[in-house]
Every structure is written in C-alpha cells, then in structure tokens.
Amino acid sequence: DIVMTQSPDSLAVSLGERATINCKSSQSVLYSSSNKNYLAWYQQKVGQPPKLLIYWASTRESGVPDRFSGSGSGTDFTLTISSLQAEDVAVYYCQQYVDTPYTFGQGTNLEIK
Amino acid sequence: QVQLHQWGAGLLKPSETLSLTCAVYGGSFSGYYWTWIRQPPGKGLEWVGDLHHSGSTRYNPSLESRVTISMNTAKNQFSLKVTSVTAADTAVYYCARTGCDSSGYCGWFDPWGLGAPVIVSS
Image 1 (cartoon, each protein chain N blue to C red):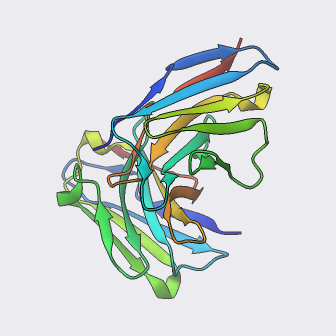
Image 2 (cartoon, one colour):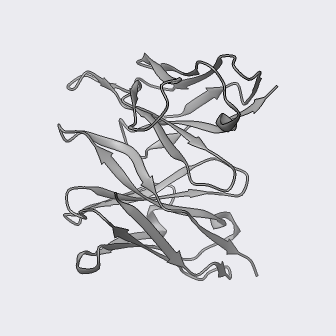
C-alpha cells in the first residue's frame, strides 16, 4: 500500500495568515501515461463528511474559494490556504488514487491561533 | 446535483453482518465507480472498496475476505456487507462517488453521503 504522511499533525494559524499543510507519499503518485499527479485534498469539519477541495494535485473543485491551492509533484505535495478564515477550521486530508487500495494521510487539524 | 442518501443498522454484536445501502439521486448511476469509505471514532479515513456500474468490484485487501459491494441499478442503489464484524469495525461508514475527468481518469471522491455510524459491541 502507498503510505501518505502529512505534516504537521496539528497547526494553529492567525486569521488572515497563510496556512501550509504538507503531504508525502511513500511512492510517486505521478502516472506517466497521463502526466498527472493522482492526489486529492479534502476538508472535514466536525460532524460532517469530508468535502473535496482539490484533485490532480492542483485543480480546484468548483465552488472552492481561490484562497485554497494545491501544489507539488511526484511524492511531495502542499495544500496552502492563503488567508485563513474562521470557517476554514477543520481537519484536512490528502489522498492518493494512483493505485488501490486508495489511501489517505492521517489528517492535519487546523485551528485558529 | 448528485446526492447520496445512506442507511443501515447502527448497532451490531460481534460476529454479525454489517449491511448498509446508499441511494443515488439526481444523477446517472452509469459510468462511475461507487465507493465505501469508513472512519473509526477520532481517526482517519480508510477506503473499503468500490463497484463500477459494469459490476466489477475492488476491495481493500485488509477487509477483502469479509466485504461484498453490490448494486441494484433499477433503484440506483449500491450496498455494503461486512461479515463477522468485531469492535475494530466500529466506524462511521460513508458512501461516495468516485469522480472522473473528461478523459476517463478517476479517483477522487465527490459527493459523499452524510455517513452512517456503526457500533459493534457485545
């Protein structure tokens, strides 16, 4: 199985400041035939199902605010929230879909400082 | 807009069979993978398996011997069964659609059902 490791486990950021969450995969999720990184990011608020934010590592899902952005390639990826809002308090997960079993990172708990 | 509505028994005894169903509303059942994901209390997400509308299935090897995902295309529903449950199967179980792009490459999950809590306790 591909192991996804996120850092940090927990993060506290002031309102309006930048939040950065990292995700590292145990093997590359770049699929050569499509030249795409098979990586997604989700946001999960308390008591709710996860919500898709980004797929193909950097493609923002429709309706997701543009303060959310994804970057990276191969084994190292980053989710950036450019200006933290109160409603962004949540747990964030990365997920690889280059191979089954699809696997998720352990989650990063984002709070307001 | 596709919505998923899920239901099933929430309290089981060890060795019983978990059974959940997910109904798809507002969109086509065909052409997609339909997925089950679970989340133990206070923990992260685990992919259980999926089913393509053609009938093919893929399961997480950690559960494969006990899991069956099936569908009822007439009702736009798909179901999950897990046999011989233990306390380790206690989790919120989510159904979801596996998203695909225009080239047919798939793998992210959207939308999700609201989740069905399952507790296994004697």
